[in-house]
Length: 208
Image 1: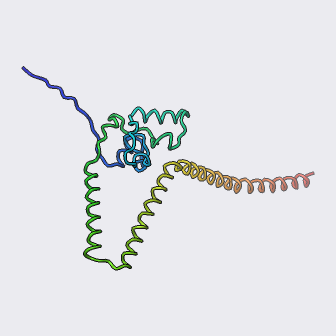
Image 2 (image 1 turned 90 degrees about the horizontal axis):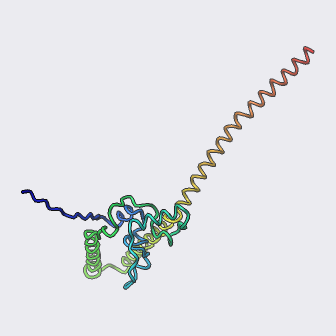
Image 3 (image 1 turned 90 degrees about the vertical axis):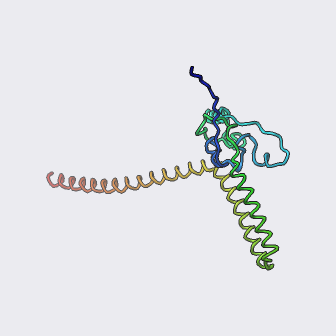
């Protein structure tokens, strides 16, 4: 006798925090909006914040469909990071599991940074000038990250408008070049035609 045993398979997706938004149609939004709920960074970064409403695949599709139909303005506070429809919609959002490896890497990086800081303070004993320059580098890196985040946010929100303007500029440049080309052909043609008419008129007067 053959016994059949059926198992219920649950599909999970694991990856880094940049991969998840890409799969869910929220590319480049990992630093601004939560992958699993509708909270923004300013909301979920607060200690003890209230739980946000969880995303679903149907919910993301609904946002993009309302934008397409004109029922919802395509602005960050409305779309909450949903810039496109999901690339892969057969796995629910709740099955996108936290990347444990990356969390451990982050913890390891923090421990390494603390060790380096302890060595610089207790072992190497940097001079005041070296400390000033080191702090200046850290300050510059922090500002760079801030400006980069502002630029990425601008590209996410205004990048479409910039692309449209660039396309319009290219189209106008093409039309202008075609107009110049047409003029370079038409003007000599009419000059030649006028010359022919003048010769024809002189010929008629001579015959007459």
